[in-house]
Length: 307
Length: 244
Image (cartoon, rainbow over all chains, first blue to last red; front, top):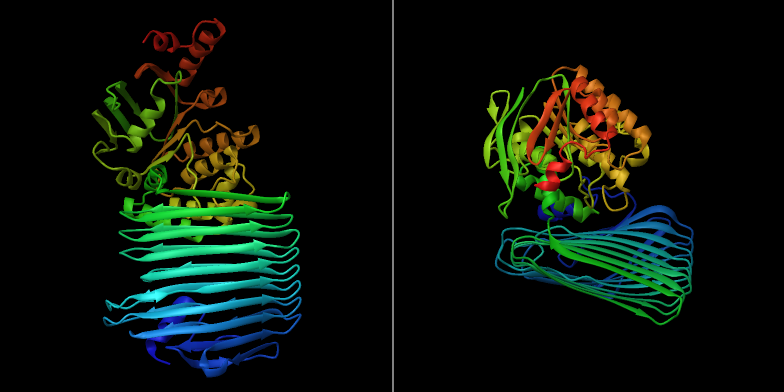
């Protein structure tokens, strides 16, 4: 594993001097740089190195699995297919960061296609950080595609963060929820320079008493542009909530298009959205505590993205 | 020592809100500024803290004229200001705000101490976000706490600290003010209509129509204010405001 990959792993996951506790699979420039299964979590490669299948035994509790993917140079176009099979009543955490680094003019891209199959009453906390590093002019792209299948009573909580340096990102999320299933998503995206980020979310609540809670926080700085499209569909008695807030800095632009579809009389769907600059009164308050204008703005944005 | 001399402020639309304010306040004293709504009290607090810049006059804090200095510089010189209308933040917790106010990490025990003064059971609040989920009374008390938390505060400005807070929290706040007064190194300036605060004030300044209408020791001014109330006439200044 090269040094750049190691530093990327530190940025996007709990990588601590070459050790992950529990099961892991490290992907580096399209190849495998390390893999470990445990008694309860089995990681198997797909044919041709195209990805992995992760099997979590029913009833597994409090275990973590790390599946970071890094690209440490230009001219890499990596597509990976990872499938998560989570057994009944299991409760695990998946850490799936991605870092792309380029030092030259050649662009690189990581396209992670994830499918989640959560069996009855299983629970997954999914943590994902994306970052781009390196001085190269080459475009750093991360395009995740996620498909979510939640059986009865299953809960998937996804925390996704795009930190900085990612020039281009298209995030597609699709999902289907069974009876009593719950999908909670917190995403935060920071773009600057002339970066572009798009979120495209489409989830169907098919099951009775299923629920979706989607919270999106965006900060678009400089000349960057972000697009947000969410579609929450309720086909049964269910609750759906989406909240998309964006802060503009400089010439940043955001296009937010939330969509709700209710196909059942008892589908309760709510959407909240707000786009604007950093509130002047917030900056004033922090200045009265002794922060400079720049410090105040940074603190407000950092807090906003972590909310 | 805080000394204001002929402080004036004119709004963008040309209306003169402060028409020449003069007063001097000493360390170890509590001064209450009172007067009718719209008389310029909040504007005065903003002009002292730097949120608005005085159009004329000088504001001396010890040997330094605050006029011309920005909000951050004034804060660093020891000006602390509790807003009348507190500000909400998504993703910033009570702990974050207290630590920003203090300028360093604060032990949980100390945060509890500060929050207790404003009547908030800390454990439940310490990691709560200062966002829309808090009630008006809760957010107001957190606002007051950000001023009590300041380590280097020399001049403490409170704009209607009693607004929206319950009786028990208010009693705690009165105690906190009296404690601060005893330290003898701080100047307390409170905008209020609250009788209890007027009673403990060393000085009372009545502002009406952008000018000091009446000023002096609390024990002299308060009876006059109470008499005006009892007589059934317009309280001091209201007549002027109505005519002006």
